Image 1: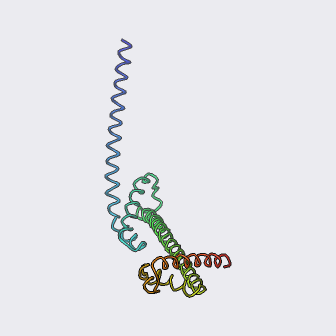
Image 2 (image 1 turned 90 degrees about the vertical axis):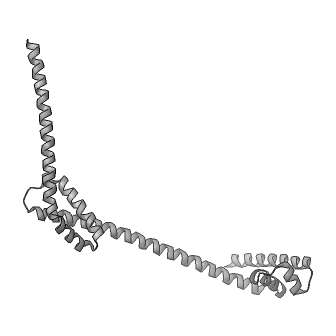
Image 3 (image 1 turned 120 degrees about the vertical axis):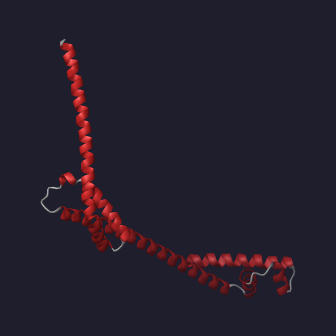
Length: 196
């Protein structure tokens, strides 16, 4: 007899917990709906404020969404010392500051990337220019025949047959002159690189 009462008490307790859970869930749902409806009243005002502070609609929408989300999560901490509007404005202003800071960091990193790229291009062009100047200097130091063969081959892009024809020599002689001219150029270029 005593055991069966205990069993009934446990079942009654279990039913009571389920009812409490259900009531809690319903209350939470009602609170969510009420809170959402209340915040909806301020959504347009918040959007205007955020757009004024951020300068564009897209960022303002993000700020408003984040503001309402944060306000909903922290509604229990709202003590009523200020109006709900003032509290929401404070959260919105904070979100605008966060978004503006993020945007500024992004823009700064973009500017830094562009500056680095410009510096690298400038350095590369300077090196290429210096290299071209060095090539011209070495070419001018070569004997006239060697310089002429190299210019025909690499500046006017003549074939070996055309070089032979222009110089009035055979093909094998043209190959030999080109080979010797290249060799002389490399030697002089390397020597001048060591001295600069």
